[in-house]
Image (cartoon, rainbow, N blue to C red; front, side, top):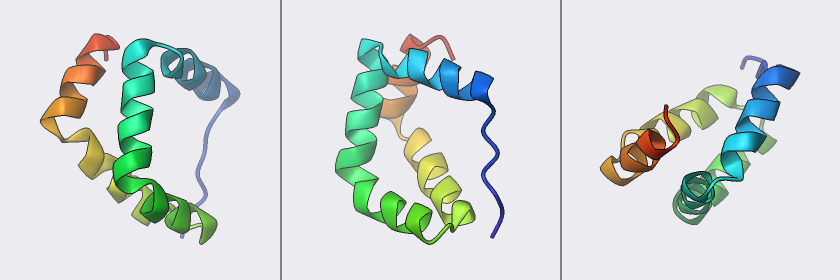
Length: 72
């Protein structure tokens, strides 16, 4: 298992995006559809599994549409 490197700048950018309508929708979908599995992976510090969960989630067409609204 590897460490999850998040810089203060990345966290600030994430928090800014999370406050937008699209960001809130993305986080709600992630929590609704993958919350328990993601939390379990993070609790085990299995960052590789957490990364895979998020990567798969970000490939969904509805999530891709929301990401485009974020300008990403």
